Image 1 (cartoon, rainbow, N blue to C red):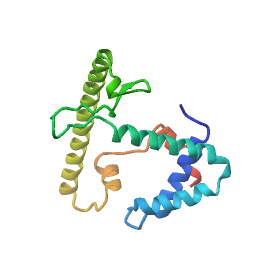
Image 2: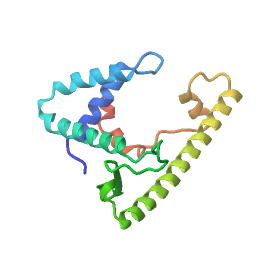
Image 3: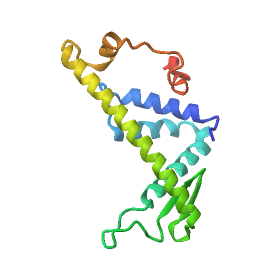
Image 4: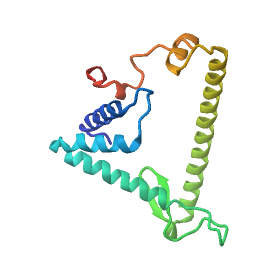
Length: 170
């Protein structure tokens, strides 16, 4: 579910990222976090949204840390306090998992594996194409002009519509 404050929080994050970006286009996450926290403190009206984002982050961390992992002693994945994600926002403690839950988890796991492998393959293909283009065009020192000249990149107005909100004002 999206909240009306989400675009403002994303805008604050983008502004903070731009602020901490070095001349070489790099940013350090600790610096970004510090600046973002400072900027969020200036907005009392966002306290509820910030609290919700923090809770979402903690919930995500719980799900990741409690995700089943291979047990070195038994070789299995079972731990009673692990959490299995069943989709549609439903989680179940591993000790309470039913046969139907196992089937659902298997389907989700297989689907996620395919998506991950597909995305990784597309990323690797992109990286190889751009690396080859840098080698073939040694006059380019950064990706942006290479994309424009060699790959005919043009910003589409529909590119990442969510990101584009308020971007012109920055």
